[in-house]
Structure formats: structure tokens, C-alpha cells
Image (cartoon, rainbow, N blue to C red; front, side, top):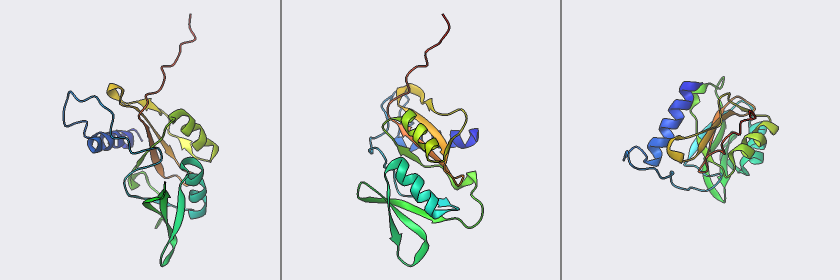
Length: 160
């Protein structure tokens, strides 16, 4: 799973342009909470996944013409991807998409309440103060990432 996280961090960094200049320390573009580029998410249970993502990110789902095995994902009135039934078992090689959130700790808590699981070792801050990420699995086991432009607050030590 750590390799998956590293690949995700690299993808996030590459897509944000932060590798174009070693001096650049600004966060990736602000696409808005709950928004990403177009993507596909596979699931073993379409209804359960719709409920999970609607509860976590506020997404709506529209039918895909000619299929009862897929739904178009709509965020803020804009189609952003497709949720579709997988052919076989979900695997970590299906890819990870990072969805921007405003409050990463609150979103991790909400994911767990909705039946997801935050992957051990997450969330954590990205280098240079550009934000923080978490990787979780939805109730059917599909990995998904969350990105916040705001770094996590430092952990206070209880030692005196």
C-alpha cells in the first residue's frame, strides 16, 4: 500500500506542476472541495458506493444511458467521472484519484462513519507545506485519496 501512496503522491505532484521548478513551493491549483478531473471508480456494489460517495463528498449520480451497471458522478452541477461495476475483484491497481477536501481530519472521520477505512500511516503532510493527503478504501475496497491545501496541525506531545 505504501507503493500505492508514493505513486499517488507522485501523480499529485506531477499533475500540479510542482516538479517544474525546484524553487516552487505553492500548492497545486485550487479546484474546489469535492472536485477532480474526470475519472472512473470501480465498485462491487453500485448502490453502496453511491451512498458512500454522496455522504462523503456530496456527489450526485445520473444514470448512464444504456447501462444499469454505471452512473455518472456529478459534483457542483458538473459531471466529473463515472462509478461503474467492476468485472471481478477490486484491486489496488485500479488507481487512486485524489479528491480535494476542505478539512482532511473531518473527512477521514466521515469516511470511517460511512463504512470506509483510512489506510494506516495516513493522513500526513506533503513536503513544503503544500497540503496534506490521506488514502482510504471505500466500503467495497476501492482505494481513493483525499487532498487538502491546508497542512495538518502539529501533533501536541503529552510529555512534559
